[in-house]
Length: 114
Image (cartoon, rainbow, N blue to C red):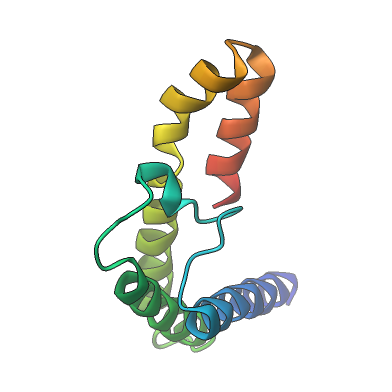
C-alpha cells in the first residue's frame, strides 16, 4: 500500500509538470534548463509540447498495472533527457561563478532534481 501511494504522488507530480509545460509551451528553467544549451534552440516550443504530452501520458500510464512498466520507461527516458539539460552548466557555471565546490554541488543537485 505504501508503494502505491508513492506511485500516485509521482504520477501527480509528473502530470502537473506536463500540464504546465503544455500551458506555457516552454520548459521550466529551474528544473528543465534547456536554455543552458543556447538561447535560440530551433523547435524548442515543439519539443516542449512533445515533452508535455509524453509526461502526461507516462504519468497516467504508471497508474495502471498493465501499463506501469511502459509508463515507467517513458518517464525514465524523459527525465534522463531533462538531466542532460544540466550538463553544459558543468562547464559554464564554474567559469562565471568560480571554481568552488558549492558551484559543482549546486549543478549536481540540479541534475538529481530533474
